[in-house]
Length: 636
Image (spheres, rainbow, N blue to C red):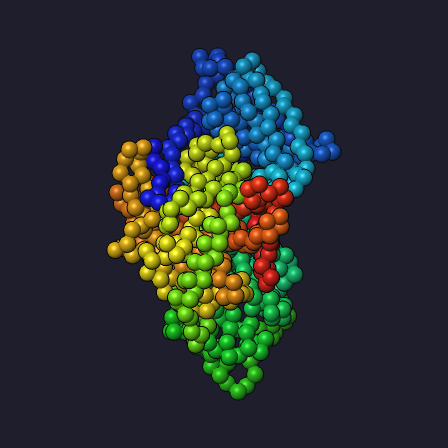
């Protein structure tokens, strides 16, 4: 058993081994009349094999007819093993050659509540099963977009296709895509890469058709939404492009590329203030990855009349990218007394869409490295020039806010929504899973500088319920780094005045001091095994008006090869929660992104929290929006 403990704080990850046996699993993709979906090595009773059953499942909507959207159907054995999984076609799916035993049938469909039905298949033969779906009653009901697990062979073919596309070998890519498509025609990733292939072949219409098909199977497939929006922009269909990219932002509010494309759409539509806002958000989220957005931001600033800031943005960009001739030309135009031309000049006259370049195709491909955000020390995010920062004052006032938090909190509860995805060696997210927990946090300072932070997830919860048996802990406690009893253990610096969602915030850097005790995080292998301290470094944004911590981002000071911990990147955005009966407002985690590479597992998780309640307070409290905040409630 591998678990996480702390010296003074119970903080981050408790990991527990959970053996998952998936050998011999059958993956149904669609009804196959006259054929069999039989697991590897299965044999009919006449051949001396175990008895099997054929299942014909009909999923019906509210009107009693076939469900109008694609549904994901999963067969789970009594042991918890996923035996078969696939998507419906016209509300129907068939599983053939399945062992005759008991099953739990789980059905997930966008817009509907999840359905579960028990099935007794001990009697061999054919069985017809009808499952009625109920429309979702609220935004968190149901699991949203259905996801299909890729069988290992299909996953391998898809990975080879991806490598061929990166190498600009469309012929090789097509042979692998065809093989993957035969095995998983309804998988959104397969259809999405088929679209990238046709874009590489300069057939934009076919590319769009496959991206549209990917969205049929997963309406929140961000890459397909963005690719369609960019294709429609090339065709000068700006309203349609705006619609798709807004869906992408809604599906993943933390996608810097989605905000960047939306900024480009707004710029072309002469919505200049919105373009600046989205470009700023893209740069904020993407850090070094989003450097390419800075020239676009400069154009939006120039056209909105803010040439002074546009010049600063371009100057910073050119300093880091001296070989970008286009940016230099943009700077020359900005410094010229002649008025800059609008980005829309001549746009309407362009009737034929420009062909996609190799660079554009490459941008559409998932990269092996892009699953992990840039390291916090890769580049210092921009701050306002010439604004002095009083380090001691900021640390002191932020520490007081943390002390108020500890004083006011004995225990609080929330509803936690978890989105989990594993990242394979080709950089493709796979095996997506969702969880919902009743989340309880108790914080106690039992002597100065020593805290007990305990987290529960329901009375019947066990760590094995987390994907892979690896449990995430400590998100509410991360801000305790700034507690007056802990702040001295970190080397801190104030980098200047930055922006957080458009609000002024002091940008602080911190790093665990080697000569001070590490009271924040440690990993322990086994009940009686040695404890492995994990030193953190990172950055925090502290509101300039209230000195509340509004965002934190951390990385490891160093890898821990002894426990095979290669990466651990955490981003937490905080929001205000007001508890009216106690007249207390606290800043608590709103959304958290967790990335780690541990023992060969590369994982990305998104936690969102809602329905906060303070212990002994009856009234449910929603996360409130800051006065100038533009994001809404966190989405599952």
